[in-house]
Length: 173
Image (cartoon, rainbow, N blue to C red; front, top):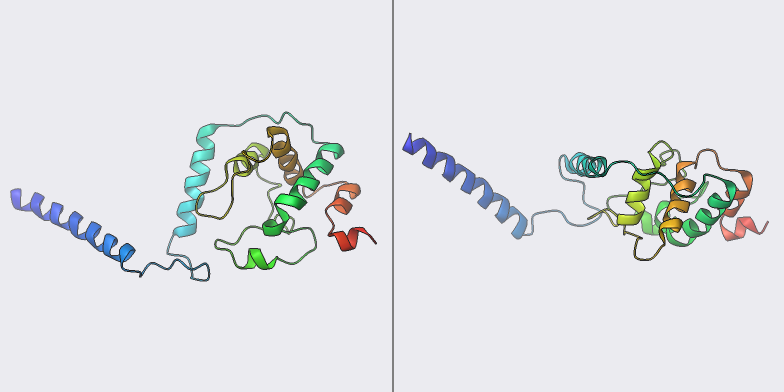
């Protein structure tokens, strides 16, 4: 029995030593152009979902109306569009060079099907090791909720809001 326990301990130390060597020897792909490690995206998605689920839902203190969407659109264009794009526009050069690639929120894979409180948390807190910063230090709670409401209703925005989200050259036409 003693030999079995020693074998288990040596096996664990060997695995940990191998992992340490892999991480410190420069073999871990860290470039944004490198392919993801096996299960990397799945593990990250599960970790984020579990953490947000643990916090529980919150109700929005701002209404889901055109004035809120317009205010959210202005903030979104200034702070979010560089990575997450605008409607009917190609992915930006910045977004194309990021890993993981930021979702293009107005191109069908947006967040309109996510609970608003989850989107609020992602905007306010950010997502570690993803390039997504937390905006809580820069934006007020009301501003974060305005962007959240905009994104939660991104598939059914009024025409005035869609015009406000158009790039400057398109909006002037």
